[in-house]
Length: 391
Image (cartoon, rainbow, N blue to C red; front, side):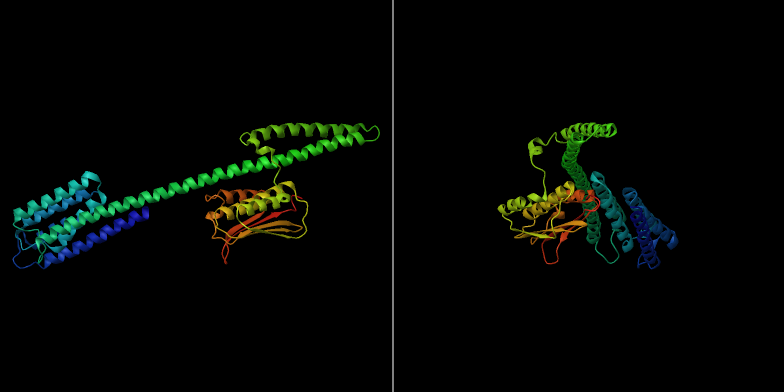
């Protein structure tokens, strides 16, 4: 904004200096029949003072227009006694002033500036016997020029306001989009937390059961060992109590969804069947020997495939989809591709929330996620979940 203001200010000075040069040239080469009181020097000074206020036209449009009209009255009624016509540069300077009133003045003040300005010039023109007409030009043309300049200024102002409103609206939409993405990320993290707390609670339960079993099979009188096992069992039971409380809070709005089995790649065939029944043929390719995955990775892998297929089904218009599951000793790679037209932001709902969910799950395990359109058409979601740190 500061750069724009500086450019406008120097542009106004450049325009003012150009008009000063033009009007001084016309004063130095007056038309035949021009009679001046006080000589050409007086007329030259008045011409300079007439044009100079244009340098501040944006700051005070009405004041600048009034100043130009005042000096025009002085020039035509006091300095010049015979009027073959006003210099063309003077008419252009007045047109610039009228344009500025239209462009930089709002509401009634703009219309009042136009009406008062034209009325003042009409009075000066009448009193001077026709001073307001460019040399060699017709008077109606000059009047039309002033009115047209004001109207152009009004149109420029209207477009400027529209552009400001559009920019403000775009900023507001972007702010709303970012807020929705933040909310989506928070909701997805809560969903991940609910699912992972189930996993953790199950694991802690197994620990407690195994400790109890160890106590039963412990042979002999081993006070230290029994005390240690008792401590582990007590700590495990306390952890289970706290986990159940936390799960109760997380599931407050889940209803009966907590009764459903945990998602897993073991149920991937069921998911693909549901997608096929919805009308999208899906091919499943498994590479590498399937291995037992950590429950959290297994759950996240299922959700990523589910999001990718939902995206292909709802938004891409695909006729075919392909799911690739690749097992390696270090990573689990997932790829969901389709031959559709792509999707909005790579999402499952057109607003970016599906992509947010996948990114949250991948980042939880330090993995990588790539989404985008393919060169040969369609859309692809590729995720890599490391196994080394979680196995």
